[in-house]
Image (tube, rainbow, N blue to C red; front, side):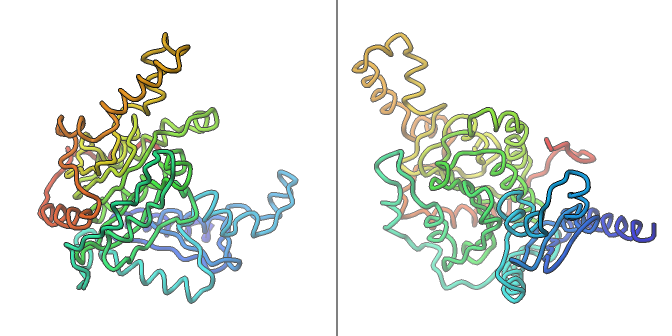
Length: 374
């Protein structure tokens, strides 16, 4: 009983400290049984490859109850938690690398929710332009590109610390600096599943957004999202509620929020990704942005269902739809986009937006706490 009481005492302190100070767990060996709930409450969990593992019940208990024979690594190694379950936010090759990378992460974070994130002198001009970004988005709307290239060319000195790089790769989360100040970056990754939002990516990004909001870290969001992942597996897994977590996180966040739409922003996924409707402060779009309920082909097949038998008519309708809606100007005319900017000037415009928002003050209605759709 003393052991159980000791567990719970630690869990309580972790819980009360959540949102007050950043909490980081580094698993460098076995972490089994009740122990695992302490790191689970903390903000970030990192593991060491092949030497650390985490699980609630060990291989012997599993074999007794379910008759499965598994090793420690198969049950709770880094491949399980950093790639499949999402419990761990990263895994490093050895203890030294783990400690070095955690130090790098801490350098981006404030000491508590009453302090600002540390500012670091940067020799990277905030007004730097990058002509290569003008050709980042392919002419073919179905062709992928690497969103990390945009992130690295926007943040100071290409220094970006990614969170959970091996889990839900269709969304990128991490910390960088713009003009010396820490920012949290959330970005769809067109190279993986076309950047679609699914259960795992929604959970991953929602947790990251809530951390940034708790510690007054501004959010920069890069959007290229064709929608939510369709299918029975996703719906049965609770995509509605999991997708709502990300929506909820962005809506309740009171930190400065700057959003850039690079290409597709379709349907409800457009709303969820820090849109103006969720209190996005400054929302930009590249000329290549397409903001609509859905893509041209899907929309035309619904609106002009009676003409599906005529390929020429459908092609003409598609071309008409693209001309009218496959651009950022309809949304801009309604005030949902603040400006359509050229890609090469992205860093300069984001840096200026964040500078203008430094004194932002926004409070939510008083409540004991919210009821996020867990």
